[in-house]
Length: 463
Image (cartoon, rainbow, N blue to C red; front, side, top):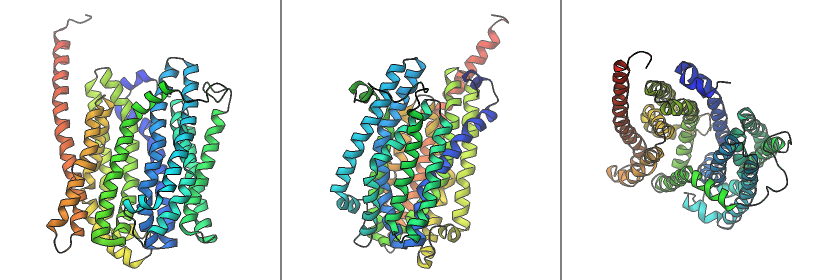
């Protein structure tokens, strides 16, 4: 294991490889977890079912975001308490996460089931796709508590020094899901309900694996009497830390509602299926970039704190290059072999043919997206969370929403093209915004580096 001090000494390229590789593996596996249902549903249930899943998935992600709302902040608190060797407070933080996730999981389940159809209509469901989306989300909501515990405990494991166990739990969940999907969908003819049931069971098994760690009394932080209650001081701090990613997830859901409804209005259910296919393809590569960001963050943060700005900028530069290469891959695949990419999700000839044009439009700006994602994470790594949040909002809200509503007016004969083009235009504008903000900060860092060099040159040896 690389000690913290070596973040300031080891070659940056070597550090980035060692730190990013586990993150890339975990993120890639996690992306497979999100697309495997789409592949089996697309082949086993048809284009309308795939449209229904496109509607249901953002709602499912929103439900999971409530679990992360608690878990992300609590895992940060847990790491702080372990660093302070305050093991009693760390145990109380763990108990707080479990109890809060149980309460929040049940609450989201009840509200979701009570208003399921109106929510799905708001996310873009039509009379043709509602049944598929309803069947899928009904099962997912019944297992919502497991979803909350799965994500919440996974975050806690990483803070406890069990990144491999956290990754293993994710891999196990994906493997079980891949095995059960064809059994339930094809073998037992359960359709989308089978896909949802496979997801819930896979999360149950992953949760059991996570619980086994926390039930071990030899662990510094484990389940025991006296931790099972909601402590509002811990809850407030957890939610304050988790508020930023939660709000970004919420903003994303608002964007999805608007985009889905514009697609449904101008292009019908088939447009939603097309969007779902492209989204899932892009998602796989975006998760790889997120893994790279996980590797960059501690390197940039440490060297920023140590005032070794040249190493900090080198780590950013390498990560940006790698991320651009990753997202350029999806650009080339989408532009050169869009039909082949679509056939991964469906054999429906109409859907395969109709997806080619929107795929080429959407991926036309993907080579810029990796840079934008890394720049946002760079600002987070040096403590400028506000700038990072702003960059996320530029892509999801500030540019995309107005463009989605305005662009169809420019394509009077085929307004659906306006919706498709709104996506790459917003990506391009957000990348340019990121570049402008980055250049301002780099100018400041170069000035600091020049001052450091001037001080070094003017200081006598051995001073």
